[in-house]
Image 1 (cartoon, rainbow, N blue to C red):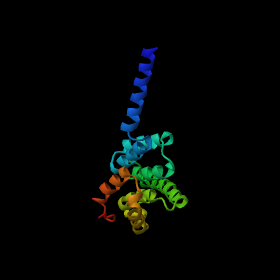
Image 2: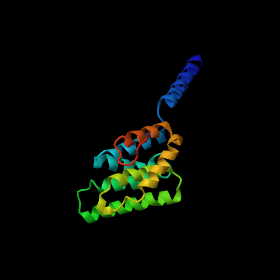
Image 3: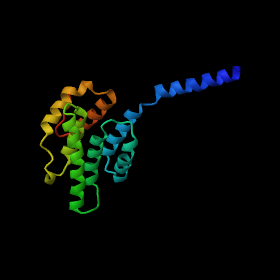
Image 4: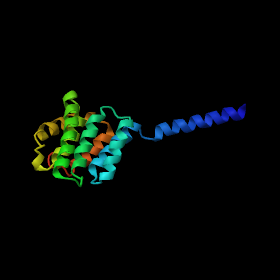
Length: 162
């Protein structure tokens, strides 16, 4: 009986240790999305798109839209095919922003895409308002997301943080 109790306590302690040392699933999922958005690796982007349906993220449509738009610029197909993927992603992201207009993270996703979208797609009309909202809500973001935004701002044309 004592061995069983010790075993139970050991397993319980390992579980507690893992909870406090491992980042939350949502945080991991978000970090992976932003890592893929930062890369120019089509395979990494597709992996994140494939993982999204099972992820712990809420409002997955915004992340999916941003990933699709990034993916469109890396595809090897025709311009028509690339534009179709871009437009599909844009629809998803814009629907999320319309549904949650005060969600500054979705505005950050849009800013990432807007700054890097080819001029021909004319996806750059909301840069100023997105930058303003991101700056206003920056202190309300979780620390891991603040770090992602800070890292982005170092090379951003439009988002400059103090």
